[in-house]
Length: 211
View 1: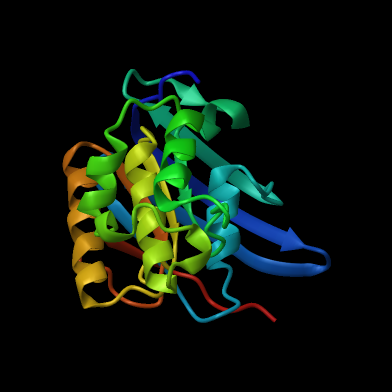
View 2: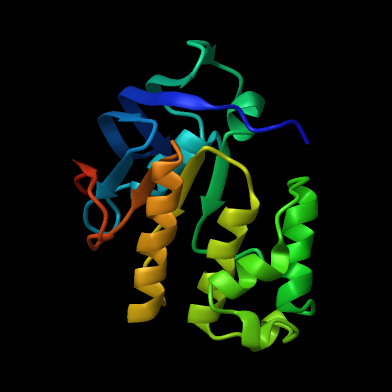
């Protein structure tokens, strides 16, 4: 896999999204620079997950523009190029239930052509004691921690997070803050859909529910 592209900024201008006959959101504007966190907030049904999917290139907007700008000033217009910039943590954990925690992490590392120390990352996210346990036996919180490990294994500048606090206990939330801080301090970008503060300074965009 090609190396991840370095990003300086992502901007959305007057974005709207329609699924079926329903307008999910319209008039979405945002700008997030390297080293910054943007939170998408709003009630259930406001379109937070759909907005993340548009940014990831998984959904096409009905209108508006989305611009990924690299550190050398190049604008990325191709979804495949943008895809190499994105790491995703959503509701579906994408784990293979029959594989162990270690095997799942090793699979993600190979998929990303990453040379990370898998065992060290699993220890960092608090999964050392269950490293050889099949993923099918993990708790919801442990599965979320393995999702955090996946972020660390993928060398991508943009993290798109859908309710990242879900299923995490107090220690897990503190771990998330630490991991987010490390990514942002390294020049990464984070856009997160959330109902609750993440414990990291952020810009906020409020999406309103559509009927």
